[in-house]
Length: 149
Image 1: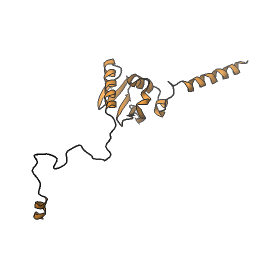
Image 2: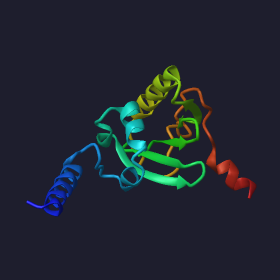
Image 3: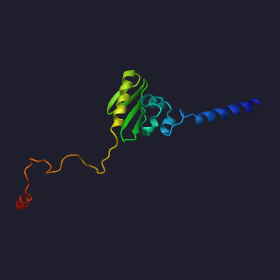
Image 4: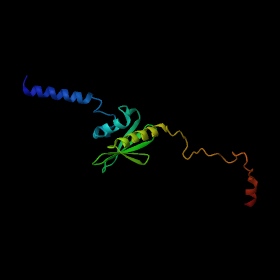
């Protein structure tokens, strides 16, 4: 076996291992383009993050900002800065190089995962009571309005 053949075999083995290793491949294109985000997602949501995440979108180039859309239609942002990553959950920023803040970010993500999906079929639907639903409400006289016209 020559040196060139040995190099080619090693190159093929490395490429096969790289493609088979689930840590390096994700179903989200942005995670594959920016592999630095993968350890952050794993730290915040465990290795099973793909079960909860619907989409990862790159929304701003500088500072690099990623919108993580969850399967229950909620979302949070991950922002890359020179010093660390920042998780923005429900408008609050958590600096992930600080362990207590990283834990609070995980708790915030857990909280928005508990919200569930928006089940409203109609836009603008509310849970407010309709007119006449209150027992002590005086009756309305629809004819009185017509008399004024």
